[in-house]
Length: 115
Length: 119
Image (tube, rainbow over all chains, first blue to last red; front, side, top):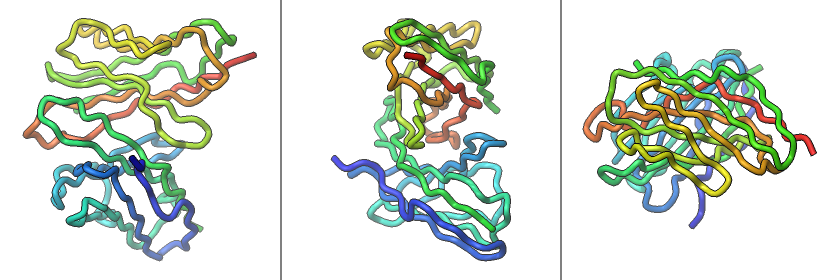
């Protein structure tokens, strides 16, 4: 079974631009979560989508948004990029079963650099 | 809100020896899950082991085992017979067990511990 895929793997953008990152979950996984990883703040939860609905959102400004499609693929968008948005963005998918720990499986990440 | 603390920014171990990574967490919930993830230089996060809070028995996965102390809110990872391939950043993570709640699917991570394995 193929793992979580993220595209693109690397991205360089200029301050003020916007960016869209894509995540394809493992087949059968309907939950997709996004995390931002930076050296200073560590791993921080952005949001989670399940069945095309955002179920939970971390403490990030409204410039960060996302969506999920009917095939469970997810995109996240960052508008008006700031230098501080430079980070590794990780996507994780999980299979939802009641009473299951449904561990999250991570993709390789998208390295975003804002100049 | 839950917090996870890893007090050891860096640890080192000799190949074939045993090392223990520490993790403490703070929560008011009684049901939850705890995980250890490994992130090698490739940056790919890999699940190492998981522990359900309602289970008293400590989880084990081959050379990896945990010491789960629920009352003390402690969740340490022991790596036995360390191998060069174990070198990575290790993250402790917490997730609520709340099938209908808003924290469903959210992992709270510690700051990470960099593990170096010496040959």
